[in-house]
Length: 63
Image (tube, rainbow, N blue to C red; front, side, top):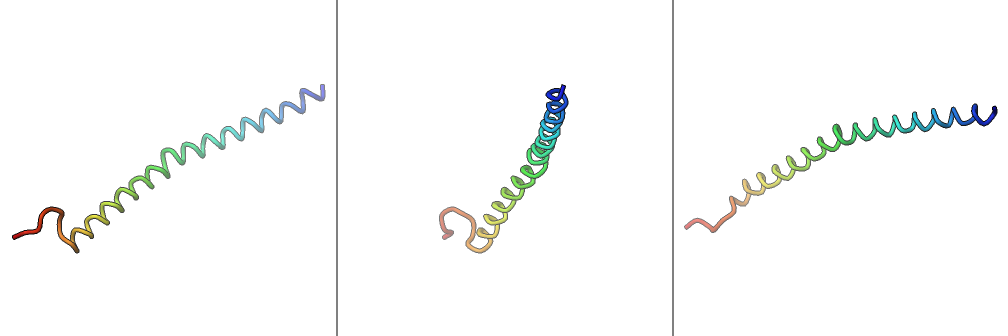
């Protein structure tokens, strides 16, 4: 009888831990990482844009 009562809280604890991990995964996968990706791509585009404003567009020099 004591084995049944001691295994049930462990099962509930595993279930709660799995729920927290799933929530963390979804927050990372659909919240934080897309924002990081947009920020990195936008930052790179801004860097290229500023570089071209200062040094001119790529290609052969004008005559």
